[in-house]
Length: 140
Image (cartoon, rainbow, N blue to C red):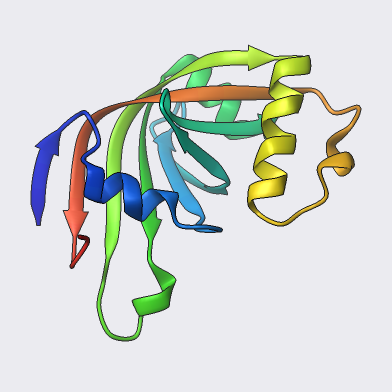
């Protein structure tokens, strides 16, 4: 396992940019109970973006305590190797309303889903600021 500090290396960026990979985020709730959620994400020049329906547990908890772990696994090699990236990060709200709706519609296109299914929803977007990046396996 190799550990580096932010920013995200070019090899990790290539790994994260692969189409239709899902992330698992993990955080602690107010009672220090761990909670995980599977999320869509976008990697761009600004970094990592995740989005949720307002009112869900994990966005509420991230607004209380912005620390999280973000893990992406390469399911394509799961039987042969354990290639994955974990990013410890802090999250900050970057959009609500129309921009957050545009974000989830962009994510829907990335993941092959219908962007129109989100029209009328109250959404929230978070930008992740990596603190530490852990690379496991053969990510090149």
